[in-house]
Image (cartoon, rainbow, N blue to C red; front, side):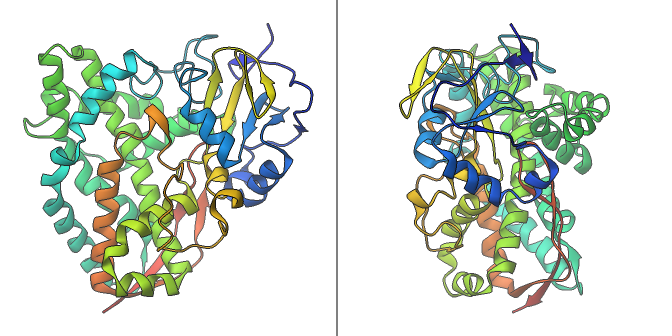
Amino acid sequence: MNMIEGHMTFEPSSGIPVWDVDPYAEDVLLDPAAYFAELRARGPLVYISKWSVLATGRYEETREIFSDHTRFVSSRGVGLNDFKCGKPWRPPSIILEVDPPDHTKTRKVMARALSPKAIAGLKDEFRQNAEMIIDGLIERDSFEAVADLAEAFPVAVFPKAVGMLDSDRRKLVDYGAMVFNALGPDNKFRRNAMAMAPDIVPWISAACARDRLTKNGLGALIYSAADDGEVTEDEAAMLVRSFLSAGVDTTVTGIGNALWCLASNLDEYEKLKADHSLARACFEEVLRFTSPVHTFARTANQDTEVAGHFVGEGTKILCVLASANLDPQKWGDPEVFRIDRKPVGHMAFGAGIHGCVGQNLARLELETVLTVLVEKVARVEFAGEAVWRPNNAIHALDRMPLRFIAR
């Protein structure tokens, strides 16, 4: 059995086009639009010869593969590594990298902790922090939007919501970036990220321990499930850590991407100012348009077919969510950012049983920031060039100088 990047190599079935491209190359990660368009144009499935994987970028097939947890499993890893073929660098996530029935158990615990009722009490705290941060930024001639708002807001509110007594912005943000970079091949982005693990992972584990959490945060709700016998104490600790691996960097990315979209589309910002109720719809369009998580993988757990093509057991498939979110067959005018689009069915939060369990919390955070923004800021202007940060699974800004003009 030949292996590459922790999964089995294979030859594609007849009729599947072969493409000599590296989807993890720096130029592709920084500006992926041409890659997405070509991926969709080549067919419903494309064989990426460099990494011996299939890739899908059209909406219909991406949603089919991503949603069918029986044929295409997460338990064999959502990156290039096939956990059936080797040991992962860390214990698999017991919410993201498992399938039923184990997934059903842990998902139930997480969904209860992150239910609309559970997070309703966070709204006032979130708004106060958003007002304080944005008020301070308005007073400045210009600011670095990634550090001063996109990172500052989630790190101000999220650890407190979880109930963490310890907070370190750099470790919290870098932990998420590290986890997502680990989903790609052994390139410089993954190596640089993994070099941070000895410093970050022990801190994260200690900060999520039961004795480092308050009694009234989301983390305490998870540990109470251990007291009730729904999960073990060790599983509860892993679930609390999953808050941080999936809930910080993606929210940082979402806020940064929203600011970029609005600064790039001033007419849409005027629409939002005129109708604050569009804040939720604006956030959904930001997710569709920029797809903070651009690629997740699935593994075929049986011989099957997609779009009439044979897919063998053990095949790794890159589900290019960002490409699916820009498929003109689904969206009509996908290259246009419209806050009144209401893009029901976008893939930014995934689909099926593995749809993002924290999306209620993410929506509350982003809706709060956008609402406060339009109440206080007349205009969002670039004060310099926006620079994107290459990551094997996340499409995020590295820095973006902005200026807020007060209303």
